[in-house]
Each structure stands twice: as structure tokens, then as C-alpha cells.
Image (cartoon, rainbow, N blue to C red; front, top):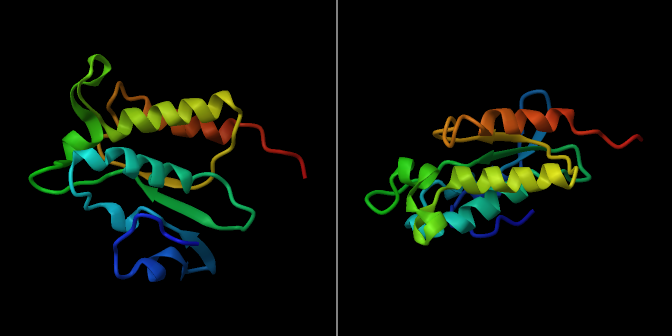
Length: 143
């Protein structure tokens, strides 16, 4: 699989490693931790969430919602946002964008598959952990 938006020299190595017990895994956003600024948050969310959609292969997807670069994208600002984005005064953070994306997937009864690693998972309102856990109870299609 091609790693879109990734400027990491080891992108091919990261995208298909075999870890112990012969488990193949993919990680698109592993090398996207260092985003240039908070203006890259939408791209970060899009790349990080798309990998969680199940594939036809038996691949463990690992995504990393955290990101940072100093001084233009400190970790708390990237995760939580800054200002009042609902009023057009600020930038919405990764966590609230991911939360909205997860709610949309639940509304469509879509399954997700993978591991999600993130910073500041207790904001907004300690909802991301339980929301991710809810996907364990989405009906699986009968084979």
C-alpha cells in the first residue's frame, strides 16, 4: 500500500513489517507525527482514520492520532485544538475531528479494525476511549 502524504525515508519499511507471531501490520501515520503546523490537522486526521477501515487482507492496522512540531504545533494544541472553532475563531483539534468521524461510522453501522494510539484521549469529555470501545460491539457480517 502506498503511504500518501508521508515524507519518511523508511515509509516502505514501516508500511509492511512482520512482527512476532507472523502478524502483518500497516501504519500510514507512523511517520506523520512531525506535522509542519496546526494547519496540517485535517490531513493528519484523514490519513490516520482511513487506515482503520477494514481491508480484505488479515492485516493489523495501527494508527497514531498524535502529532507535533515545535513551535507551530504543540501536542496539546494538535490534540485539543485552540480557540472556539465552532464560532470560526480557532482550529479544531485532532480528537474532536476523530470523535465526529467515529460517530459517523457508528451511525452507518460500519466496522473498524485496528489499534488507535493518541495523546490527551480524555478530552473532550473523556469520550474517545468509550467511543472506540463501542466498535467492539458493532455487528460483524456473517460469513
